[in-house]
Every structure is written in structure tokens, then in C-alpha cells.
Image (cartoon, rainbow, N blue to C red; front, side, top):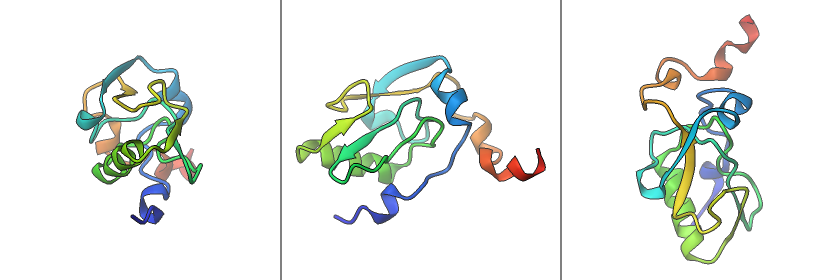
Length: 109
């Protein structure tokens, strides 16, 4: 499997700091599509973050992580290194990311 598009930077729904310090909840990995990651998830190899705090979790990233975990990749950064669960921002799915990606407005601040 190619990991190129999966490890490319994703959509940032909120700043990494805000996501990291937000109220969080652990949910099953299979239910995380559309949620906002609250943790860093780094599979090794290749050792490149697939998810960072504030990223919108996509189906493609979930499939890559599930495949990697099942194949024996070491998962760093995540609270659950076996990726049965993932920490997400505890807010409704229709959060700010549905409006506009966080970093698209930085030049106007």
C-alpha cells in the first residue's frame, strides 16, 4: 500500500494546541471518521505522523492506520498503542472544521 497521500498534511480543524488541551474522549478507531484528533499518531515505519492534534480524521487515514496496526507497525504518540481506540476532541462532529479549515485564515489575523 502506498502511504503518500495518507501521510500528507490533512485538514486542520483547529490549532494543535487547542485540540491537545481540549476536553477529550476515547472512541473506537472504526468510529473516528469525521472526528477531530486530539493526539499525535505516528506509525513506524515510516515514522511520519499520520494524525496530529486538530486534524480531521479521514476514512483514508483510518484505513491506513488499521492496516498498519494489523501488520505490526509500532504506533507512537497515541494513548492506545494498539489503536483499538483514539483520543478525539469532545465536541459535536459539526464543529468549526465544517465551516473552514483553521489555517486558511491565518494570514488575515
